[in-house]
Amino acid sequence: MLTSLLPLKYSAKLQPGETVLVNGATGVSGRIAVQVAKMLGAGKVIATGRNPRSLQLVQQLGADVVIDLKQPEEQLAGAFAAAAGKGIDVVIDFLWGRPAELLISAFIPKEAGFAKGRARYIQSGERAGSHISLPGSALRTSGLELMGIGKISLETVQEEMKGVWNGIAAGRFYMEIEKVSLADIAGAWNRNDLDGKRLVLVP
Amino acid sequence: MKAAVINAFGETPQYSEFPDAIPEEAEQLLDVARFPMG
Image (cartoon, rainbow over all chains, first blue to last red; front, side):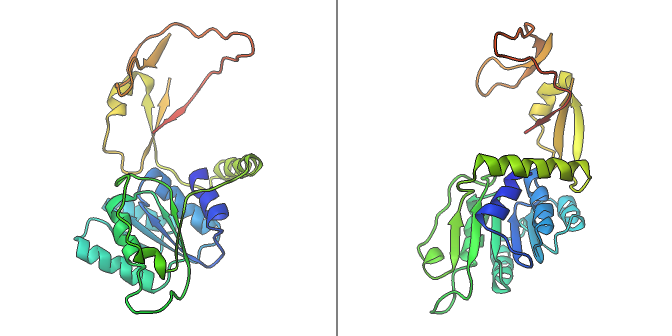
């Protein structure tokens, strides 16, 4: 939960009404990010992912628009460009790699001039790749501001942790959980069918 | 006790016997009821 709350609230300083794109919204962290963005007052949340069932779920969790990452690259680039053209204020990216390259390219102005707005792009994960190729034009006049989580004080983390626990206790956040016996750890360790589900080991 | 045991980096953990943990000075033994994986 903190992996979404801290960067959205303190790094990007998300303001009520702003548009947030969650790149990789169908994983455990991404699903939470959709909910946290809405909780912080995002006016519109765009969610990307590859799993159709999970994309449906993130809509139920608050995503206003979904983008299927499995479509051909040219179409995906077009979908990103259309979303960026309507204005994206904040991106939280759990994927990096090729999807990030296509998404970042969507912010490059097609005409000479300066960007109409700024987009704060938070690097939060690398499920699709640890490196990207970043053209200079992606930063020069795009209005794109790349950042990580940055410096957050321990006191802030502790304070926000309390809020997170209260939110969980109040049932304000949804997480798909599957309990697994510790005796089945070897099988659970190698599963690749989770699609945003969190395994919880029980003795 | 039974535990998920890893003997080397990158290995898949195995459910097997492991010596009981004995807390030393300034250490505390915690009972964990649930633990998220991943």
